[in-house]
Length: 119
Ligand SMILES: [Zn+2]
Image 1 (spheres, rainbow, N blue to C red):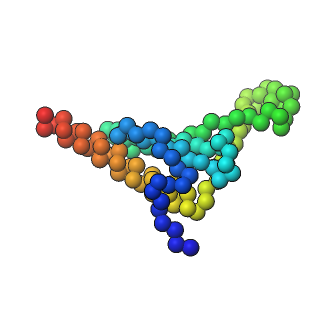
Image 2: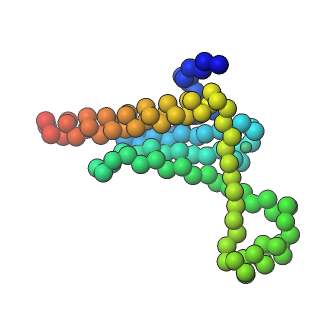
Protein backbone atom coordinates (compact mmCIF):
# COMPACT_ATOMS: atom_id res chain seq x y z
CA UNK A 1 0.00 0.00 0.00
CA UNK A 2 1.33 3.40 -0.95
CA UNK A 3 0.11 5.92 1.57
CA UNK A 4 0.46 9.65 1.24
CA UNK A 5 0.59 12.23 4.01
CA UNK A 6 -2.84 13.77 4.49
CA UNK A 7 -3.70 17.43 5.03
CA UNK A 8 -5.74 17.80 7.15
CA UNK A 9 -4.45 14.68 8.80
CA UNK A 10 -6.52 11.80 10.12
CA UNK A 11 -6.01 11.25 13.83
CA UNK A 12 -3.90 14.37 14.43
CA UNK A 13 -5.58 17.66 15.27
CA UNK A 14 -3.84 20.95 15.83
CA UNK A 15 -5.07 22.48 19.07
CA UNK A 16 -2.76 25.49 19.48
CA UNK A 17 -0.46 27.46 17.25
CA UNK A 18 1.53 30.30 18.75
CA UNK A 19 4.18 30.42 16.10
CA UNK A 20 7.09 29.18 18.14
CA UNK A 21 5.01 26.51 19.84
CA UNK A 22 2.39 24.19 18.45
CA UNK A 23 0.06 21.78 20.20
CA UNK A 24 -1.59 18.68 18.75
CA UNK A 25 -4.11 16.15 19.91
CA UNK A 26 -3.32 12.60 18.84
CA UNK A 27 -6.35 10.35 18.77
CA UNK A 28 -6.38 6.62 19.47
CA UNK A 29 -7.68 4.07 16.97
CA UNK A 30 -10.00 2.63 19.62
CA UNK A 31 -12.03 5.85 19.52
CA UNK A 32 -11.80 6.53 23.22
CA UNK A 33 -10.58 9.99 24.19
CA UNK A 34 -9.24 8.56 27.44
CA UNK A 35 -6.09 7.28 25.77
CA UNK A 36 -5.43 10.12 23.33
CA UNK A 37 -2.36 12.18 24.01
CA UNK A 38 -1.16 15.74 23.56
CA UNK A 39 2.01 16.71 21.77
CA UNK A 40 3.78 20.05 22.08
CA UNK A 41 6.55 21.15 19.80
CA UNK A 42 8.33 24.25 21.07
CA UNK A 43 11.31 26.19 19.78
CA UNK A 44 13.46 28.27 22.13
CA UNK A 45 16.99 29.69 22.27
CA UNK A 46 18.53 26.28 22.73
CA UNK A 47 16.57 24.31 20.16
CA UNK A 48 13.34 22.41 19.74
CA UNK A 49 11.70 20.26 22.36
CA UNK A 50 8.79 17.91 21.92
CA UNK A 51 6.66 17.06 24.92
CA UNK A 52 4.14 14.24 24.87
CA UNK A 53 1.69 13.83 27.68
CA UNK A 54 -1.59 12.19 28.41
CA UNK A 55 -4.16 12.40 31.12
CA UNK A 56 -4.85 9.00 32.55
CA UNK A 57 -7.88 7.98 34.47
CA UNK A 58 -7.70 5.17 36.98
CA UNK A 59 -9.88 2.18 36.39
CA UNK A 60 -11.08 2.21 39.96
CA UNK A 61 -13.67 -0.42 39.19
CA UNK A 62 -11.03 -2.91 38.08
CA UNK A 63 -9.31 -3.18 41.47
CA UNK A 64 -10.48 -2.84 45.03
CA UNK A 65 -9.74 0.17 47.17
CA UNK A 66 -7.64 -2.11 49.36
CA UNK A 67 -5.44 -2.98 46.41
CA UNK A 68 -4.60 0.68 45.89
CA UNK A 69 -4.11 1.36 49.57
CA UNK A 70 -1.88 -1.71 49.93
CA UNK A 71 0.12 -0.87 46.80
CA UNK A 72 0.62 2.70 47.99
CA UNK A 73 1.77 1.51 51.39
CA UNK A 74 4.18 -1.09 50.09
CA UNK A 75 5.49 0.51 46.90
CA UNK A 76 4.79 4.17 47.54
CA UNK A 77 3.29 4.68 44.13
CA UNK A 78 0.66 3.31 41.78
CA UNK A 79 1.55 2.59 38.21
CA UNK A 80 -0.70 3.51 35.36
CA UNK A 81 -0.32 2.79 31.71
CA UNK A 82 -1.81 4.42 28.70
CA UNK A 83 -1.20 3.81 25.05
CA UNK A 84 -2.23 5.29 21.76
CA UNK A 85 -2.80 2.95 18.85
CA UNK A 86 -2.23 4.46 15.41
CA UNK A 87 -3.02 3.16 11.96
CA UNK A 88 -0.36 3.19 9.27
CA UNK A 89 -1.91 6.32 7.78
CA UNK A 90 -2.03 8.11 11.11
CA UNK A 91 1.56 7.13 11.90
CA UNK A 92 2.68 8.62 8.62
CA UNK A 93 0.72 11.81 9.31
CA UNK A 94 2.16 11.97 12.82
CA UNK A 95 5.73 11.68 11.60
CA UNK A 96 5.22 14.34 8.95
CA UNK A 97 3.48 16.76 11.31
CA UNK A 98 6.36 16.50 13.79
CA UNK A 99 8.84 17.23 11.03
CA UNK A 100 6.94 20.27 9.74
CA UNK A 101 6.27 21.52 13.29
CA UNK A 102 10.02 21.59 13.95
CA UNK A 103 10.60 23.51 10.73
CA UNK A 104 7.72 25.96 11.35
CA UNK A 105 8.60 26.79 14.95
CA UNK A 106 12.30 27.24 14.18
CA UNK A 107 11.53 29.46 11.18
CA UNK A 108 9.08 31.49 13.24
CA UNK A 109 11.75 32.22 15.82
CA UNK A 110 14.34 32.97 13.17
CA UNK A 111 12.03 35.48 11.44
CA UNK A 112 11.19 37.12 14.75
CA UNK A 113 14.89 37.40 15.57
CA UNK A 114 15.67 38.89 12.16
CA UNK A 115 12.86 41.42 12.57
CA UNK A 116 14.22 42.53 15.94
CA UNK A 117 17.69 42.89 14.50
CA UNK A 118 16.59 45.11 11.60
CA UNK A 119 14.35 47.39 13.67
ZN1 LIG B 1 -7.26 3.63 22.81
